[in-house]
Image 1 (cartoon, rainbow, N blue to C red):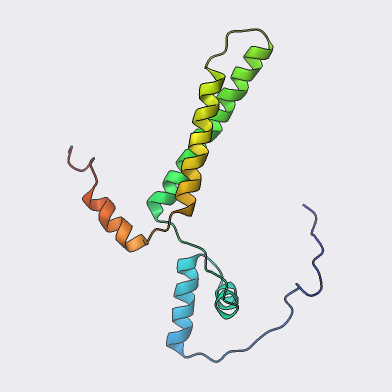
Image 2 (image 1 turned 60 degrees about the vertical axis):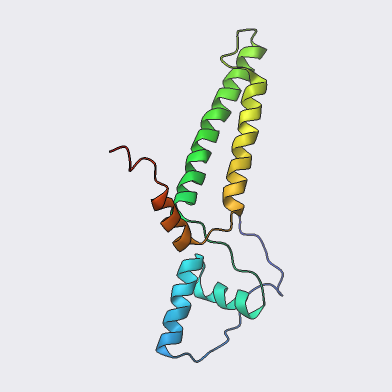
Length: 136
């Protein structure tokens, strides 16, 4: 992919030195890791009053990924169904039902991505509600 030219006003070429104690520096490193952004981006967002990105729990991220994989499989099934219809063959699945399922799947992924989850609280609650642990 070719590099896009940025406006000269948007190119970050200035360094703004800040004095920090060892504890402050470590706190910034931890906060930037928790937010999943660089320390520079954390400082820019805090200084410029931009909101920090929401962090999702590990389970939410795994679920989001799994739903993406299911979505890929559904896309392949939809393509095979549409191809079968165009060729005059019996489709392997109902195209309307597949499309409805795909839209529902995308909505689930959007809901997970926009969920305002606190990692510590959600993990404690999920451990209490783990139905598979009781089946042993």
